[in-house]
Length: 269
Image: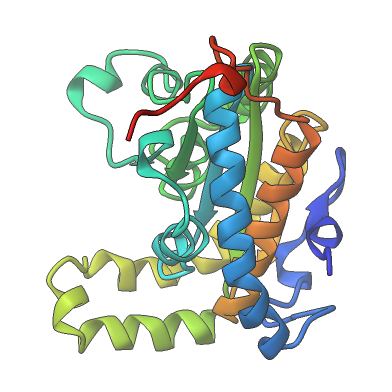
């Protein structure tokens, strides 16, 4: 059951998020997806260990989506079997004055993984062609030039050994509303909720247009986008896990041999 490829966006595709069903679960039932995830967690954990030992490559995982699309949940469920020594998660907030004083990719480059490491971006540099566009924070000529700049940046990372997987967690307005209501009434979530998350729903069409163009123009051979139906959490987790595992397996990771002869070592009683 290898389903992730059907959600990968080919280069130069004309993406229209409004035409894609956020509730679709093609190729799997809930029972199959939930049964598969523990094995995928274990397999991913081992592959991340091999990546750390191999030291030739790094992996950058980008998670984008509307509020409540499941970015935090994806990290929690997909990476539950990963040793935290080899994995970092970073969430990009509003730029600080120091960050705003540099080009928009300056703070992003500093957070990218070193060889042997996995880094997950919970939101990313795609905010700089998303929210800044929707709210007119920079002129059109500025954000429109960023597509090519992002592609060049990601091409540089790939040439330096960093493999990049980008996931847009595609949630419906109805499902988002339900999840926001659950957050409001959950004491463990309500304290960190911003009312602006609710206000942003008024800009839904503009966000869909912005993300559609970003995915269309920035899904490349070396840094593909996946549009993951995210209304069903189990399916979201299944697709993301499968795609990451497939990418790591394709690297043919090979941990270096020990600096001693294991057959000659004796451990005293």
